[in-house]
Length: 303
Image 1 (cartoon, one colour):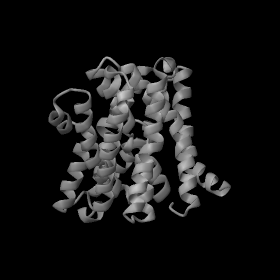
Image 2 (spheres, rainbow, N blue to C red):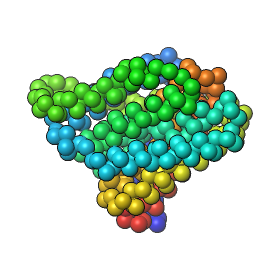
Image 3 (cartoon, one colour):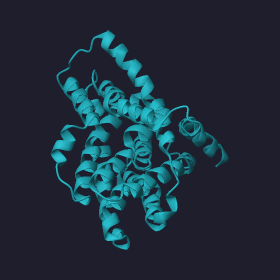
Image 4 (cartoon, rainbow, N blue to C red):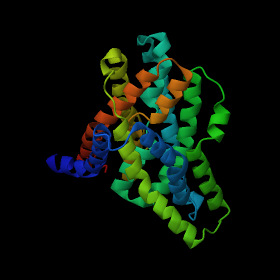
């Protein structure tokens, strides 16, 4: 088991250090909130969509689509949401939508991708990209529903990550040749995506108002970091998926709450602070839960 923990920390350790770098440089005022906001916008609107585009473009779409993996991801997400709607009765009604979204909506495109690539290499990016495209679409539809808002189709059509993935799918389907100079440029942008994104996440961690919503936050952390991966990995094992597929399911299902959940909650509800606290706590504890989960899967020969 000790060897499994050493292996696990070899994957999560660099993630933790980059989060700490982001937190540290923000605390000493090396960067300010304006810079972090701009860097986040750069990642979300440019470098991450480019990374996911090139992960799919130039490859056969059949190689990128793993139907059993994707169906289990979608089914597990719906099971988790149904369970959260039941448990949500323990939460004050006005906070319920924020709780549900914060408990299922994972940071797939950054932390999930970072750990999957760190474990299996960049060859898993096409599988992960298609998975993210479909599951994120469901994420957004459910979020708009539970937050009692409208405009889901407009939000989906404007989502840069989904645009990048769908452009990659189209390029793959029509076998569009990508010139080498464009691919080289894409490689430069791709290389900065995950480090910059992780530093930005670390810089935004703020625990000042943590204790005001203790029970709601604890429940959200429990479901996001423990119940979610248990459901997805359990379904993967039940349907006989391979070890790489199980690993991908774990890395994506166990990812901390996505920052996008805070953005949507702030725009659509009066509980943006609660959403931010859920993001902060799941991100801080996510490295520990990731390490423990990787170690357990490693011990049983599943990673």
